[in-house]
Image (cartoon, rainbow, N blue to C red; front, side, top):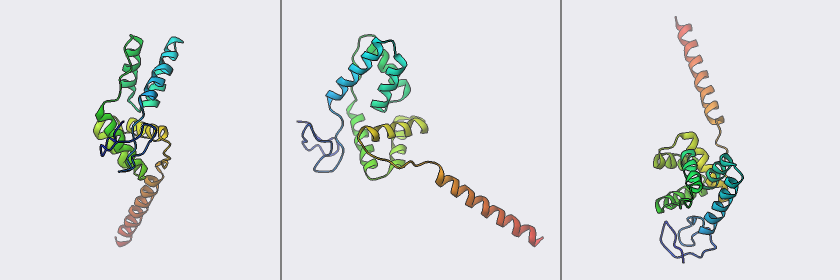
Length: 165
């Protein structure tokens, strides 16, 4: 019986949440087998770029890692299975996403993997989508509003300075 990567309590193979600590349970090995079959099928059709895209979307890995994995499969090797540290990272990310902390999840992913901000955001969003977690858009509207407020404040201060002269 598998165990929760966060608290090590036993969990059933069909669950996605630990009953003890509420952490998300990483995907089962059947999912990995399905992914390998899907990627192999695309490679057999000569669709290597599509295979890399599918692998990346399903695993949340970087473009380089996805390309390396697909090329390894092309050479006859098995797709790499996620390491225990990957499962721990996924569990931490899923916990943060479940708490509505998308920005913290992206920062954690970036710190742990060294990926770019864009790739980190894409990976976290792909992970959330795979687990059915709806995340806020987190677009740049907040930054835009803050920028406008700062510009208005600067304009007011500049106007006051000009009036005092």
